[in-house]
Length: 276
Image (cartoon, rainbow, N blue to C red; front, side, top):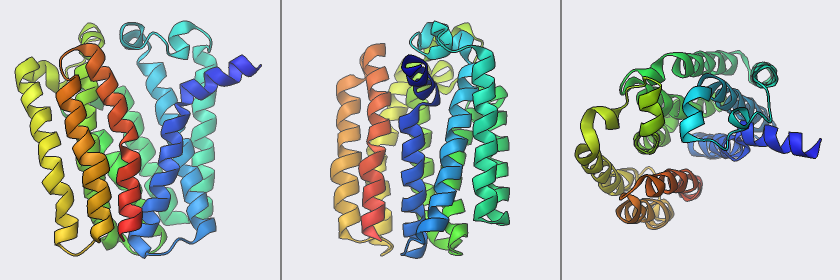
């Protein structure tokens, strides 16, 4: 029983879902300057389960690709069946809708819209060059917009939403770069395939380098304070660029770089939370 539960946690990519909760609390704080705890908790739980739905459905759709790219995934190993994963995905989506309804009808409509985008991404968009990357970046940025709706301060959500869009677009290109072998075998066309190794190397170099001045814009504009600037640049953008320089040389390095980009979200979110 314990082993089975562990496999479901892996299938859900639980750490990603926890980061989604943090994103909601940061988004509400950035938009309103205060955090209504119960309302924010309800929205965060909705986004938590929506994230799980997205991850599980992604593994179901990508099972053939994962046999080459991610052999440790529960569906590939057979520790969880496709039927079990499907039931888990449906359960997670229902829970997401339920918590969204408790948060208000506008929030429900946003969660519904994001769930449709997630479904389209997993089943179609990810196979269209660039479209999939843009879809993931958009879905992530919409979490900040939804957080702004919760506290009736959408305009203050735009800056963190743009930061999220930029960061996740860059991260999706890196993930595609690391997964290029499996994607080719599955007939998925990605940006790194179209550009080739040299141009993709230059693109990630440019995006990670420009991310530093990009993060300075909210500070210069007076939206966020010095604490935001120091934390975001020193503990996110600078380590990101350094990791790219060190790890870009082979597929194993790219896989590690993709993981690092996920965990560097934490200081970036902390910078936004403390910088308001």
